[in-house]
Length: 262
Ligand code: 2YJ
Image (tube, rainbow, N blue to C red):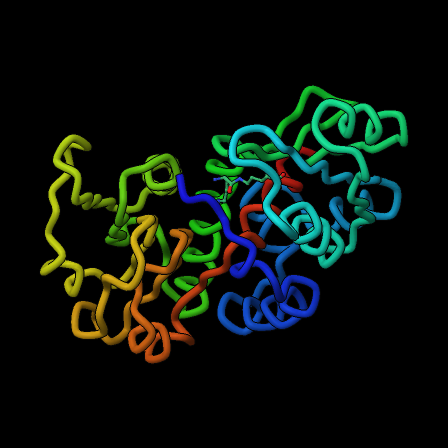
């Protein structure tokens, strides 16, 4: 799993608003609406909950340690969806205790392997890999619907068969999409056919590899939802496809975790 680095999430506070507007332009949905759709919730219900719920983000020092701005970035994203979110001063178990005793309804915590939103009042949890896959499939579906097409029976290519790619495949199959998966690691048991990417109109880019997809490899009308970090498209491809591409470092996954856990 890719470990986030501070430089990737630095512009969070101001960036959230800009990305929310861009998301709305491309998918017709705000971040909250997209997260609600991905979690099978109604945006109205989430908006109603946002008035009362308190969310806390707790820094975790385990493993490779605290990533500067990580908990603050999670808090900024949660706030951008209309919820109240605080970053706890204490870290780790002490921080979880601080959040719990402050009355937090939801606690966000991440180590190097797992990023969770834990509900303190109900047996519910938001897990980042599943939420990210659900969020990006919802984004792809919304872009498809905006073109008056349907995801059912649509050919969707999933690039990368890691945790997010696997969840994406499962969610897409449940929606009736025709799913193909490529992975360059032969041990994943999937073909690696970068030359065939051009034949797919709909793509989930879930690889952890940077800038390996060039514009010539993509169909001109391709719609791309890219949870992979860093982005697999090179700068030129990202620029050319910017209006057909949904990608962020943390927002969609985090907002969907919130919607799943509440
Ligand atoms: O609390 C902190 O600052 C750190 N313990 C955060 C660790 C963040 N975890 C990661 O970067 C994981 N690889 C999960 C990232 C999920 C993004 N899809």
